[in-house]
Length: 115
Image 1 (cartoon, helix red, strand yellow):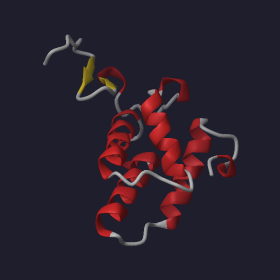
Image 2 (tube, rainbow, N blue to C red; image 1 turned 180 degrees about the horizontal axis):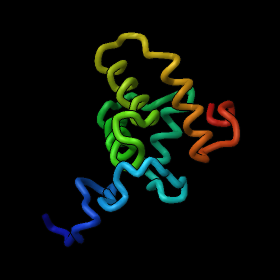
Image 3 (tube, rainbow, N blue to C red; image 1 turned 120 degrees about the vertical axis):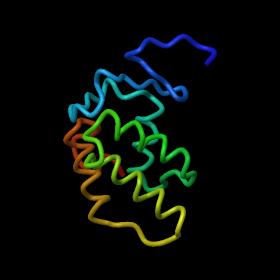
Image 4 (cartoon, one colour; image 1 turned 90 degrees about the vertical axis):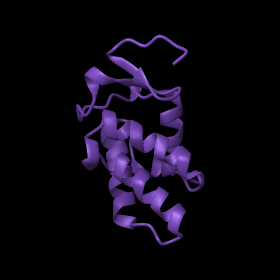
């Protein structure tokens, strides 16, 4: 590793992972890194990302900083990556849950604001 990292702030790439705050279930939109927020908003848009590696980057962040495997943003990112990899239809109910979650977290006031 070429950069110094504190034991409580680890990074695999440019996105920092706050080890002390992993899987807290409490996500403050102000603490979501800009790149992850951008990818997350794109996942909610009419033109989501088509690169599964980008989608998985967001999935990893939400898994670590959200509710783990039950985090709706993580679940939707994994679902979308599966769709991209297999070209099978995605789960509409999971998408709706993801949009509802983003409203709950504070990314938007209404789900239609995300589209």
